[in-house]
Image 1 (tube, rainbow, N blue to C red):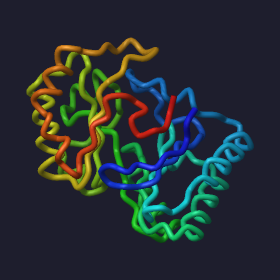
Image 2: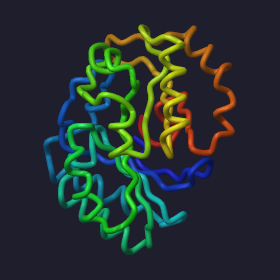
Image 3: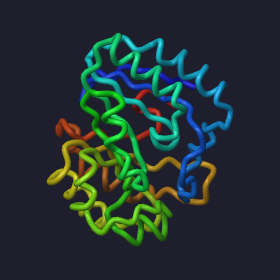
Length: 229
């Protein structure tokens, strides 16, 4: 499992994939990433400390991800991250959070004392697809509500049941209303959710121009950020 990388393309930064306690929701129909979680705090902290030793402060920006939300990282790991932030002169950090933690985002900003950009995996702004098909349990009304809390959004593309119109609307929303966006092309895994190859081929042609949009990153594989397995 690769857990550290330096991203030298768009939005230059270092990125670490840490272990954490189980995801607060853990019921998304498309996700088996939660298998990286653990209930053993000593194991989690030992692994994370070794990963964090790799951080160099190269660009002054660090992204911390785990199989869930940053609020599921043990306090000892959070303290290790804060120590690295100070030692390596990190000025900006990207963290992930599930919608259920929106009332606690400021806690994390206060804890680290630097600029924190929160990312959220909405997967789609289509409420039925997001909650009834993907079972995200992210029950906001529209993008305006999301924008109050998050400036970075992750979308999912290429799932059976999605439509071109749905994807167009999602990408238009991110391009028009958010500072950052990540588009994940769905990779089949151990879940029952299936990949739509025709839809993905259409996306590649229709949205080829996104490669030149600085605020949008497209991941054709789960490991395109250089971390994961």
